[in-house]
Image (cartoon, rainbow, N blue to C red; front, side, top):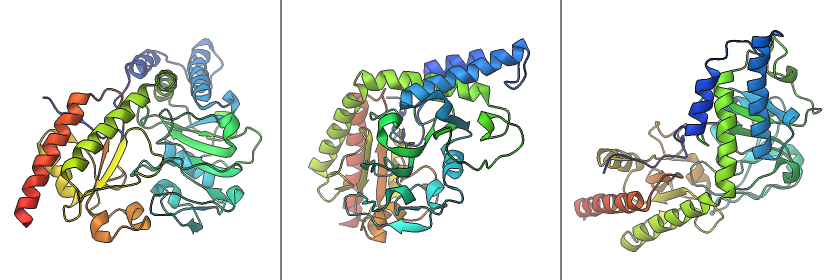
Length: 347
């Protein structure tokens, strides 16, 4: 078997639809801010993608602001607002919060004052999904977008951030969704692009790919393809649980993303597991892609009550739409062999 990619929560492979849209956009020479025919053609690409992203999110086209990614979108949504946020927010959000909301052992967060709070929809390390309270100020939708049903029109959240590369779009493009009339202090100033809210010539190639990916992701969600992925995730967990009794499946008692399994095997460092599985031909991670390169225990898992040692013994396996049953079974068998070897060494 060739290499198996099981790190879709870090980034998803580029969709064929996104690749085709980006290739077509490369031939469009105009600047979207120019008024001549070439400029109007470039502008049309941006606005088509805006409509595609808006439809996938259940938002109005005028509510969508394109950014360089979810990190910039989060900064644009949060800067200067002094909001409180959960103790398990992504670092891109945690950098902007003033007070920390506690989290329980299942990864669930209670928000007492939604209008002054930000809360991620789904955690990037555990896959635990939150119930977003009505009137919430900001939510990071990055992991849940395209995998779970969501409509900005009925969610009751003022501002949400998303990223293209988590749904099979290109890296380096994202969006903030915010009511057009809402107050927003632009962080990048200069031209009047993105309705005056985010200056800089639009990345039309990336934006075109984002729009195509959003449209394709919406179709996959409607077709129930992520329900099939959830069945594979459950198969994986059952195979591992039967033969590694001491392993903890983080957040299993909570609603989770259909494709993420976070597991802790006490005494077996996560980074060691990642390297062992990489050599065996499987790409997994020891947590969020933005922090897994650092040799330290997961902050998220410690906030959920795990010890530092156990938090350092975590891995994340995240499946994709193209993941097969044979790949899941092969991973489970390979991991269990490594697990058996590890237990023999420490016995």
